[in-house]
Image (cartoon, rainbow over all chains, first blue to last red; front, top):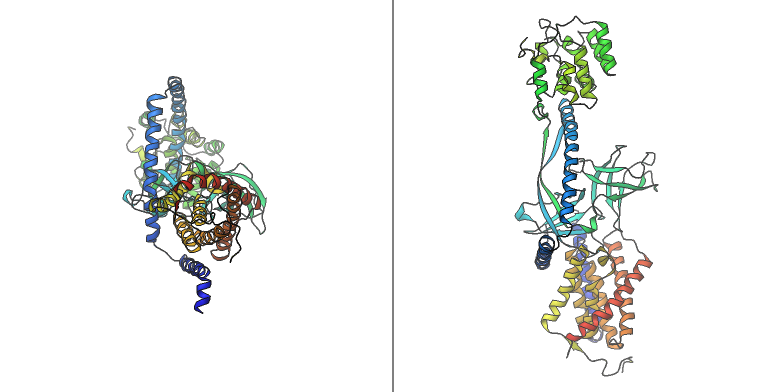
Length: 433
Length: 173
């Protein structure tokens, strides 16, 4: 026996070493389903390698900055001029987008939407990779000391990058979205189909879980759905590049990531997210024109007539529903219906409906007036009560006009003097008349 | 008397100083982790830790030393990745053992032999890695002959150049 062992000593040792490694691997495979802590040996390896990477990055950046910021300034003046022009254009664009955003906020408030905000991010620099194409990981220069935790989302301005996989004191490991073990809850922008974004063995990204009878076209944008509880909803993920029928009942959808994952230098780690319900106070600025319009005396109100309701109906399709509501004042409105009519921009009928008996959560007129004027209403319920028969009923047609403006995207137009805004029940008590 | 294809001079056993023994594998691991940050294809086609394993194993001509060199370098490489620790360890242990065993029998100082050996070892390494990753750890792996051969050639050519520089650190045992 001894002679055999002596003769095949090398082979025996080889088998022994391989056996130990296989055993170690087996232990890991067995435990990989559990919630495992970071192994100390992995911490040591990362701590041994990353300081060199940090130093090299620091030296590289220092040299690069010195060159680009102090030496190589050719064409900077022309670029500066070009950027100034661009800023002017963007300012104009911003004004338009602000109005759109304010309108969206008002509508969200009306619908009691809960919004997710990226409250705090930490900028980090990519300092290394896993070095193999078997696992697609990055190392970033921020860690536990900067309050990073596992499963935090990692993004750039272009879109999502991945999630924090392991956190070390001053370094973190980021799992890219094109890794095989990665999974992101996504939604297609136009078709609103949901699926799971997975990485493939060759580093591509595919969308899984979309049924083959659905219509998905190349070029469609993919956004995060927020369903994975890691990425906030609505972040860009990529675009559909190819669609084909898969083996099972699902489509094979190839995705081109919005971020160039192979050339990342800086990333943002989302360290804090907030979820809050959009409130009326969030609604955009109160414009002087609105305040002025509310304080102006209005034309005495006319009794409700079918023509007024018809005029309102002409202003928007949903106004017809509101006219029905006017015709049936005793009808107790349901929350959903109210919301539906509100979004359609029908402020006409509800003040007449809104007797103290009606415990409507949000009278349509009040809500739509808000949308039209952008003025926060302190209390919807009070508004409903103020709209009692004792109060002069508001004019129908101008109100419809103002709401229509708001609903058609002209939030600014909604405050136009031509709309002669109807005093809102909630604000009537404050108005001079 | 074992039949070998090497002369007495060619089976000269070499050793390396401690800084070289420790520093060169660490440098290879560092470069392997750092360079793909700018050149992603580097990690796909080149495997510096493997080349260093082959070089040390062939130069020492001691199978035990070779397999341990491969095991340590492979395990370190595993630790930098996100998968289970041991896959590269097993693959490089096998390569280290084979390289040092062949180093005894073949003339491994010749550039042509080095090219062919590195090419072969890369394919063996890939095959072992693929088998372990797919069969044991259930990692999704796509085997591509074209990519494998291309990567083997790239590593072989790089290996010949690298070995030329690493030869400077050899010390006669």
